[in-house]
Image (cartoon, rainbow, N blue to C red; front, side):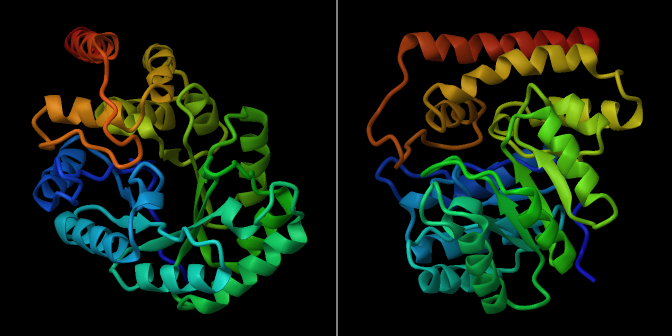
Length: 307
């Protein structure tokens, strides 16, 4: 029987770097402590937000291991980390990640089908190959990563995965309430949980049976996402005012991410540097920095007056 992951908030973790581009493990420890202090229920490490496509395998293994050590059993940690083109190399990467102490390893849907127009047959062949390579007692997940292209898992492939009994986590990036409702009906009773990555549709997905949120905005204000999930799961509709605030604010995720999140966390004293391998030496302009300041001020005012 696979281990059940908790409902709630699962940040897609950023990777702190030093100014010269090395992983900053001291900042990583503070970052893990900050997430946990904000009430998150689990951590999704070595994902796209972590800049995994810009990390070596050694760095990915080190990052996952250090995150598990920093969490120290306070919350579960899951990870992805397979980024190679060849399936055999992906299997090696996933097996290495499975040995880091994480609770589950997460498969990137687009890497199981090399071309955008590939059908379910190729996807399922790749899935069978990778799952057979991984330890049979390692819980698995899916992430519909938008890079290099977004591949939404089909109903048939999702049903196959649910029936296998090995899957426990789906990071849904469809941004489609109707599709999520259908998926939740399909997954009902299987122990295969759906975590919405989209802020605007979060309340609706929770009302339809979703298990929580796993998106980039949990790098900015996870405590408010936690509050929304707690309210909506306890009493649907009770978090509507907060949903109406968090949905529009999530538009910032389309602007210079993950650099914006790193500037935000740097301003809070959580990480030392805003360096990102993904964007090179890019810097945020005054406009973006002011937006981040104004977002913090707005949410601080909301917390004082509404919570």
